[in-house]
Length: 164
Image 1 (tube, one colour):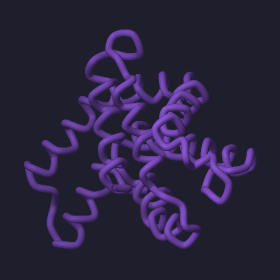
Image 2: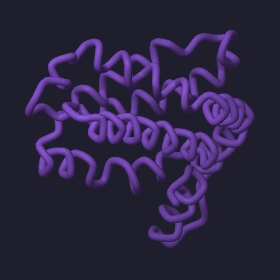
Image 3: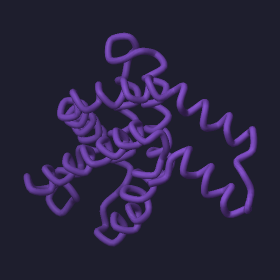
Image 4: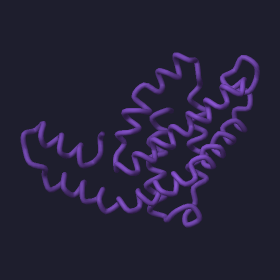
């Protein structure tokens, strides 16, 4: 799984060298932010169902036509799958917070996500809207510390940009 540590080591190994001082500073920065990332991961895990449901509701509010006959969210089964997908992205963000890198999102969420959505004729805009809502909804200190929120929002931004 890709993290700052594995990325630095892989780059140094590929170049046949030891990690540079810049590489080590990058690892040190990741280690220093680990407490904030783990706080964000803990808070997200404890509230995953609520965060995902609120994000789902926000995207359906904006894209209400998706509930119409013939659209991507027309049946309860499809609604459940949409909520499941939002939870999946939030869970991958949680994993990234723990790992300290984007590996889980890259490997399990983004690598083929857009292609799958295109093949199934599903729009990505509602997922982007759900993630934007989750980003906007987060509040320090109500939900987590300011630094934990920075780490969480950075991964939401990464996911939003990858799906946009």
